[in-house]
Amino acid sequence: MKVFGFESWGIELSTRPEKSIGSDEDWQKATAALEQALKEKGLPYEVNEGDGAFYGPKIDIKLKDALKRTWQCATIQCDFALPKRFNLAYIDAEGKEQQPIMLHRVLLGSLERFIGALIENYKGKLPLWLAPTQIVIIPINEAVLAYAQKVKTACEDKGLRVNIDNRNETLNKKIRAAEVENIPYCFIVGQKEAEQDTVSIREKGSKDKYTSPLEYAFFIQELEKAVKQHK
Image 1: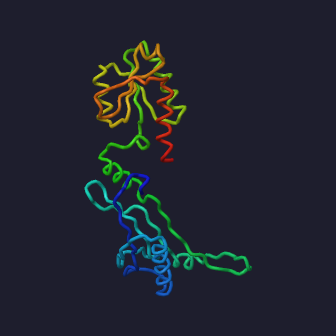
Image 2: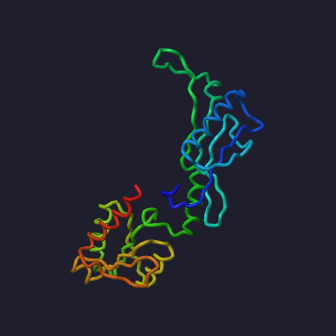
Image 3: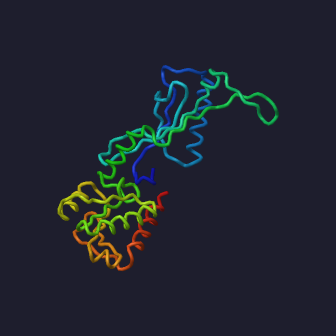
């Protein structure tokens, strides 16, 4: 969860609910296995009595969003009951038939719930590597559209997500739209940038813009490095 920027979460060991399947012996064995795994990893946890799945105990990882609300996301569930119920078996190295243990492993939980918590955690301002659109290219006029497309291609060749805003609007309105949409960077291109093979760069939240002192490809490479750190 740290990869996504979550700094606050909790771990719960959820035990056998009132309505469940499987023997007491299997439940005790499964619960002990999950608890031992948490202890070996040195992870703090709380016991959530009676909130396990009907087929086995589970480890729940619950995130806290920007409003300190709790959301269940990742989970690991130990299941002795269903393999027995479905009569599953495998042959071990000694040629003997053994019953497998099933693990239900969910990395993010409900995708919609996780994305909702993610957006709220960042208050809608996703970092560069997560932003749906990382760069918007704003051409000053139609005369530099071809150069804007060249910059876009250079960005896409580096794996960056980029759009061109070629609407018939003023520069300020286009910049304002990028701010509202929380796009990390604006690349503003005019005749001067096209002639010098550069871009004017405006970072979100900044009123200033600056021209990359080197070719625009240099700055794109820096963005590419920043994004790759999270892959």
